[in-house]
Image 1 (cartoon, rainbow, N blue to C red):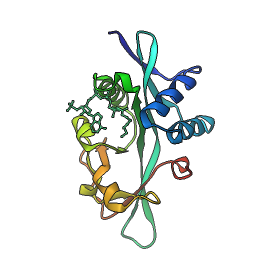
Image 2 (cartoon, rainbow, N blue to C red; image 1 turned 180 degrees about the horizontal axis):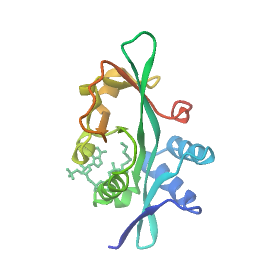
Image 3 (spheres, rainbow, N blue to C red; image 1 turned 120 degrees about the horizontal axis):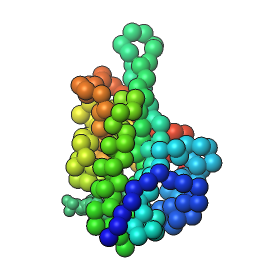
Length: 181
Ligand SMILES: CC(C)(COP(=O)(O)OP(=O)(O)OC[C@H]1O[C@@H](n2cnc3c(N)ncnc32)[C@H](O)[C@@H]1OP(=O)(O)O)[C@@H](O)C(=O)NCCC(=O)NCCS
């Protein structure tokens, strides 16, 4: 099995849409990624190619954590990345491809300037890569229609700057496209 991890290139978008539609069983995620691509927010997109076929994709987009600074009305803003979506074609799942995409892209992002990476996902999968529940750092995120408790369990953070920041209160925001679908 020959797997290559590489940046998304022009010409990959159809394959990526198919992966997203089959992995998430619908078109919400593929429409979101297409919109982000139109808005030129897919700079940090990688794919996994298996024997020349694009079978998985991962995307990171800019995100922020807003936190009251403690002095009046000013808020502190930390800049990071939101990991979403990550998907592998169903017939190739559970063969290590998602993990490989995680490992390789985290390595590529090791020296970038971001304070954190956030993800809303399966805790057991992401904790292998150093993600921990964001609630431990008083960071939360909100999505209309999803109960806060459900988000809390699945909302994870990886601090890029050590030591990790324990905020009094932080609200994470993905790019606006994530709130439009
Ligand atoms: C989740 C996903 C990206 C993982 O990629 P993958 O290549 O299948 O995963 P790997 O083979 O690298 O790793 C397998 C591990 O992921 C875990 N895993 C896979 N799917 C999972 C799920 N839906 N919930 C929890 N854990 C899951 C497996 O239990 C396995 O754990 P183990 O190594 O402890 O046995 C992939 O299964 C997928 O595309 N799923 C559908 C879309 C999705 O849910 N994306 C993630 C959104 S957060």
